[in-house]
Image (tube, rainbow, N blue to C red; front, side):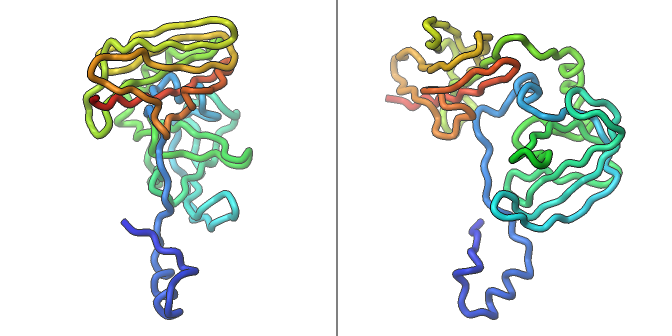
Length: 237
């Protein structure tokens, strides 16, 4: 899909016609797509709720595109503000997560610019009817006293992941290692601090950090009770 900058349209009549239609803004999701545990730790509100009402919201420069605000009745709050209702937003962007009035959802929301809770189609938010496994995991989660790290070693444009990769993480005067599983994932807990991560050489593969990794593997801060996400891509030599 092409996105048109109305300021560059000519003639004016064409611009006016184009502006009659709602065109979603461009956005992207970082990698790896978070596990339930990781997204839980990085969210400002995680809850089960039912949509009471929907309101279209105008763009608010410079931070927010147009989108929708939803008022929801809270059925269960896993983390976040107390209250019987909560309001969340989703922008009219490619990573939007639109809701329907009267439907029930489990939502992971993040406070953007310290102002409003936003939901995205980049993680584990889902219709409650489709969220059985997510709910079971949420019911068991606790916020750790240390920092959690998760990452993945995969092959671009492929569902194939790299098993048995050795990941080395250095920082705060210590070295830690992890090995990717059959799905390319690795997980570990570290003391809070500043770290860098790399994958040891593997025959037939060039492995490097992904430009859109959630956290920069070359230099990231692991915070207490927070989850850092690291994505590596493997290209054949």
